[in-house]
Image (cartoon, rainbow, N blue to C red; front, side):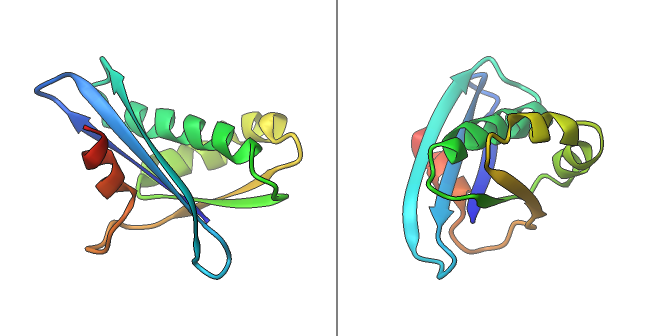
Length: 116
């Protein structure tokens, strides 16, 4: 499972994103974080994080990837309008979209804050 999260930092006009990858036994495989300037929309930040995770997933040696995010509006849009774009981009990787509400445990958000 690939978990993604994005956060905005309005004082500096930046966003951060975090990605955590675990296998089917919940064992840690990889993580990354990134900051991007001049992003002020929460949904755009989540979409940028999603694009980054798709590019990251292409490098994984798996045929199926579960992508989890806490941004329900992005999931709804990707499942309706943009799902054809995902199919075109797959290149052998079949992404499955999953909404995961934010909880108290450590999430990619922890990596986002660390990136800032």
